Amino acid sequence: MNDNAQDNAVLLRTRLKQRRTAQDPAERDRGALLIRGRLFTWLATARTALREAGRNEPRHIAAFWSMPDEPSLQALMRQWAGDDTLSLSLPVVVEPNQPLEFRLWTPDTPMHAGAYGIQEPEGAVAPTPDIVLVPALGFTRQGDRLGYGGGYYDRTLAAWQTAGHSFTSLGIAWACGDLSAEAWTPAAHDIRLDSILTDKGWAVPAPKL
Image (cartoon, one colour):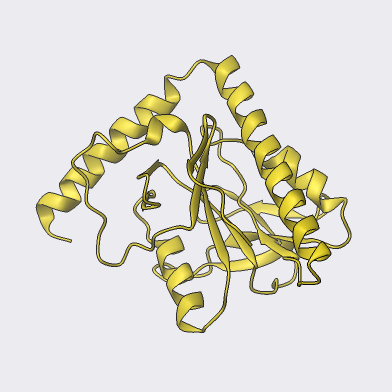
């Protein structure tokens, strides 16, 4: 990425953060509830269809610990944790500029603040996920994601692809992060996601498992 593109991405991230901060708190709570409901319904419906077809169901879900301005997933994570056929994991920054490590999480797992102040679990290393939920600051209707600039998720998804692991990637974003009207081009190393879910619905259609 050249210097102009980097500068544009920095300015764009600043504008997107301002947009999401400016959202009405009540609308933000309602939007997060809708995201959680759609996620729960999508996964339950997809798993039922796979089970009835005699196919393997996804069992390992990599989520993320939502920061205050992100759509809150914690209530849904606790709900999923009550299903003993699912395992949940959260990302851990092990080293700068390296792929993320995912560790198992339950509501009882000890947590600590990681490198960026985000809560990280102290559980065992998790299996490579079947489904990964990815926080997205911005997004396109083609599944491109603008993150926070650290590149951790792009490196992680690329490493899984290189290893030949099959997974479904699902971006979680506020609808105000839609980049359709912005002059933004993804970098060559950016990994396109399978789907994007926002508080206004599926910005990229729900993936089929």
